[in-house]
Image (cartoon, rainbow, N blue to C red; front, top):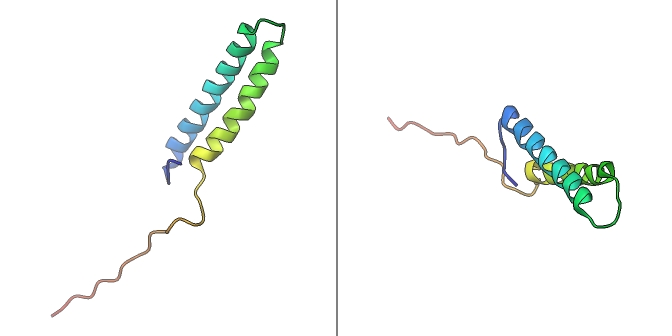
Length: 75
């Protein structure tokens, strides 16, 4: 889990994970010795990429959330 990221970085991480896993799935299906469609490998890669992107960017509810600290000025 990468923690709280700005929206732009979340989009970049999500797209990177999807592209990586779709490419790896298509390449893996192409390199297998028995015939399998490249689109099947790409679909499996897409599914794995979506799960990995979710796990990378998901924030657990059990983590301690930062809270504001009130400071009192001593005079």
